[in-house]
Length: 157
Image 1 (cartoon, one colour):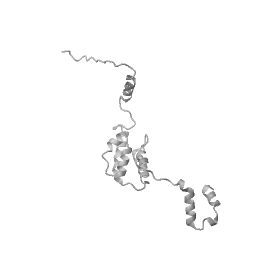
Image 2: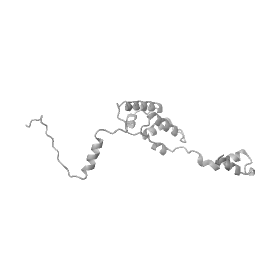
Image 3: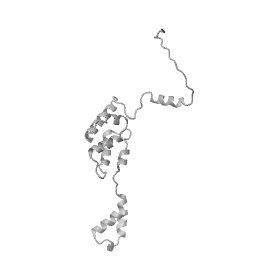
Image 4: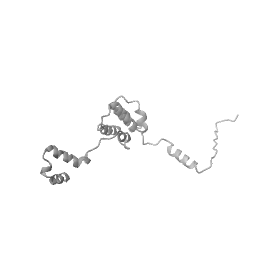
């Protein structure tokens, strides 16, 4: 049927006189399967996936934080969660530190603003970012050049 049953069948009756003995032997045999609670470092390095809704990310993160031993109070959770945010989420949600619920509600509104195109999302590139990177990369190999512009509407003195 499975590895636990195979293990159980190999036990001798005299080795497990009580249920307590059996349960202890079982725990000794299968303790590696137990899920270990996340550390503060692990919680601080969880990142929001691209195209993941803020509410889903916050709910997933909070579920993992609830498993931390000892438990983390709400203010510390908000601070730790906020440190995992990047870009527009970090800057716009900085002031929403009173409760996790308020943080999620503000994040949902931010998601809506991004979806409607009123706020630039964390994955969209800013205008000119690609050309700026090219200019910086190419300037290393070429000599400096002087650029002048002529304004036809401007009269010389």
